[in-house]
Image (cartoon, rainbow, N blue to C red; front, side):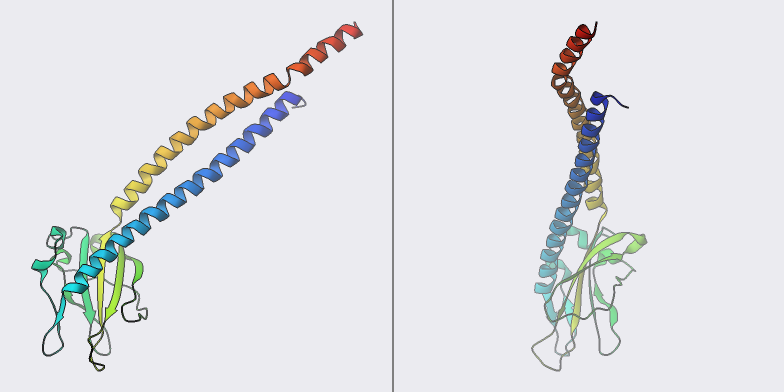
Length: 209
């Protein structure tokens, strides 16, 4: 513990370990944020598609022709991609319209206030308890007295979480290899750097003798 070589090497390795851990956490967080944001942007594009297909009849009731939606997952029960239309005067009615993929389930989310056209994102529980990322917006007809309708699009987060987990595994393995290489470099640096001191130590010992 009193050895200069040991103290230099220990300080270097601790500093390397801390730096790699901080870099690892930063990279993992940035990747998760990027994947989640990209996934949310894709869902927003799906929400735009559903919004474009929304029509109203003479009584003001909404209608969406599911045949005009391009993604086949809309029609496959519990496929992991869902849309839903909520609305009604007073207490909000859930699932006035919904995709076939929801089957007998409905999407539930916090009752936050939405300005017309503004998109909000939530993480909610879906069919079978699956975690979903949900995007929503409120749409109102031109009639000032018209009922506002809430359009929801949600998708399963499992694929995103799998991608994040796989990236974290690769990142951890890469950091471990990098730490090993840096440790070897630190040992070599300390050995080379202290070589003159060892020569001086031998010279002093010779003078002492």
